[in-house]
Image (cartoon, rainbow, N blue to C red; front, side, top):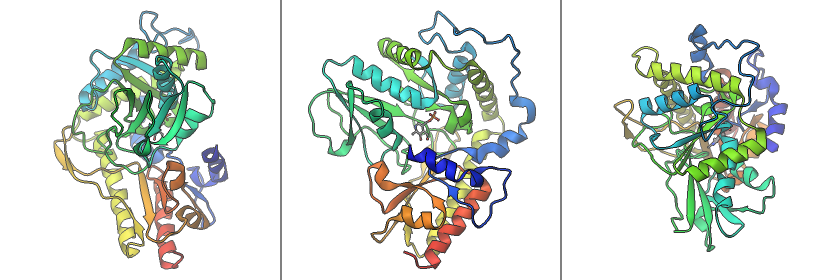
Length: 386
Ligand SMILES: Cc1ncc(COP(=O)(O)O)c(C=O)c1O
């Protein structure tokens, strides 16, 4: 996949032990969430997990649970965190753990299409959408479902599944389903519905909601995600998919995720070390700096504006500070290619169902990479390359 080829090319730029040189290529194509490393460093040993040689050897975690490979400690930690934040209803819901929400999204599409009568079931998302949905739904060439692209132009009859990402990746907007026909099912991807990115304005209770450890705390390497699922049959089908795909989910990762999610919940009650407070300040500062560069460029570039809303979690009015910047340019330029000449790799808007005038830029990189990005974006404007 293109994204991973890019990652190799710029390994030198994203390795924290290397000092960034002018020649370094910086990779802001994928959303590798290293931005929060400093916070976890300050937590010292509070998140350290010790695993003995004889621990966690069985495939099974809890044979009585629909999701029999989920560690009970992780389930408790997930329910505890949602209760503390108020960003999803967990009562009377099955939790399915996955190797990242990437696996769960595929499991959910498989589950929902396998219980429908006619195939292939259409899969759609309103553009601009998270480009990985395209790969997830086309790579295996399943006969059960078919990627149909932009939900706004979907005019077919028959069963469909709409993927709704809110706040949206790539453009940070707050989203609802757009098709709303009786034959449809909706999968809500709430990867970024956390208080450091956006105000928590309501507690969603949809039938299928996906969350990922990667984008809450930044621990993407643990590869843990979870789905909150209302219907038992759907949950069972998702579990079946994960059984066939990977016979469960690594327990070491689950233990680490449980530990860190519990610490995160504890910090919600702290005045001085709240992770979400720290994360919000970090994201806010980055967005302010980026908006300043755009302003200085005489608005050659464009960025979406986000309305303020009252956050039930923090008790304050706040803006959305998305994990990705959806940067546009006014002229009919291929912004991705122009930035590539400046040694900045981004995701081209056309991969997200939009146009080449837009790119998706990760806001989750390390500080030195972010500063270099701002510098190169500013140079693009002052060198009149646009
Ligand atoms: C909207 C969205 N969903 C899912 C994922 C994947 O998360 P995970 O690392 O849990 O597979 C991402 C990662 O960028 C994402 O942006």
